[in-house]
Length: 185
Ligand code: NI
Image (tube, rainbow, N blue to C red; front, side):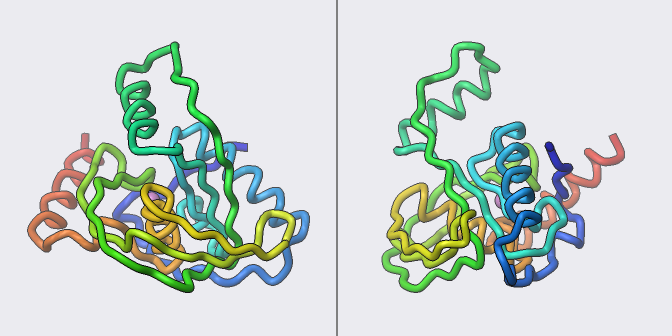
């Protein structure tokens, strides 16, 4: 089932998610619906917060490399029927915690909750994350590059933080004005 996504500046995106108590059938169904929604909206990551479910759950499917990511974006831009053959890596993180970080890098980010907007954000370049998977098993993952960026972006959602919060006050004001205009049509 494809679920509706909350859009900036919706205040529900500011809700802090609660830990999942048990990975039961309800949680598994939510994870399944989150993957369906993420693929339908052509995102590479989705946090439960974005579909107004305030539990610590994130799903992701991040391309292998920056080159693959650029191909993916090009496909989308061209609305091409001939999709590139990109390797899929579905990942689910329940009650995730980043345990180590190192380095810094700037990347252009976008978000399904902030349509038609991209901006550069500085993040840690390498991270370690501990979480439960959709079977309720704990695992540890070391991530770098786009995967590390995406994990930090999605975990921010669970804390009620959006990538646009890192921009200058002026850029945030401009975005808000643009968004209001769009809503008015
Ligand atoms: Ni996002």
